[in-house]
Image (spheres, rainbow, N blue to C red):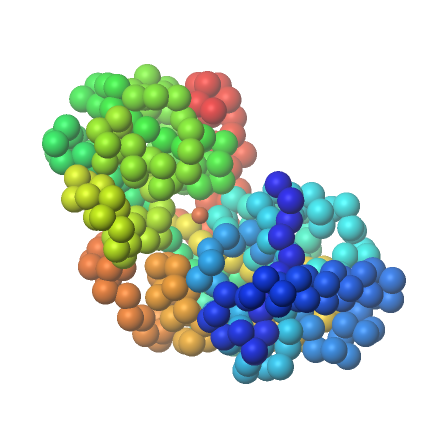
Length: 368
Ligand code: FE
């Protein structure tokens, strides 16, 4: 996947960039990054710039970044790519990397970046007071810190015509004989799945989780493929009876005005899994200041901005994620219509760490 370079400025609040504008900003971004490579930090720092590597892939974040520039005058040069390509790029760039902040989706990836020593300590009283302890990294002894900025839950969706709601109340149900030939998932090697399977292994133990995974594989309606939205659509079409999805994909379809999306949503029901046991699996999108950040002050300011009530509302209203900050007010009726639920309180660091057990389990049961 080729990384995409773009930039949000105060001139473009919430509006997509024009083609000419995009070319111009790409050039600016590219030259700023080259400057960073040849004279680390100096000219970039004077220009009040932030170099952001982001694995968030949501169009609605444009307004979030533009608002930061409007408030602080700090321009954001952004490189967007998948989690793994970004981590590879950072490893290759090493100490000469121009990147200031790394923004990732999923605790599994954040934990990986942390143990690779990519982040530096931030020691921000603002972040410590606003972001709950279970949604940020613990001290790993190397001073490598990251912060959850939004949460999402991994829920079940089922086809109302083909599946009995009593059969889909827990993640464990996906392995039961009642769902033979009805279960669809994306690849289990994807971080969203690794984190869920890892969290289950924390709760149920590794052996029981492996038995469960074996049962899920034997219940497949088809070979794992596609992303979360593809699973939702396949449940709506009847190809699958039940599937897993992150909530923001679901709410995106709930908010869609397209007749085909409305039709698809009318076929489905949503379940908060494991309400009578450990609660529904919750994951985060999060950010950390990179170890060699040339613009450290801008980087800390940016992450503190992400934890502001204003930015938290952008994340909730724009991308249908829940705020990590309690005081943040949201205006997203579809997201709110999902109602309250019992969330798994497992710390995101434990979720991240458990991906190693999860990777072994999916290999052994052939869930790819
Ligand atoms: Fe996603």
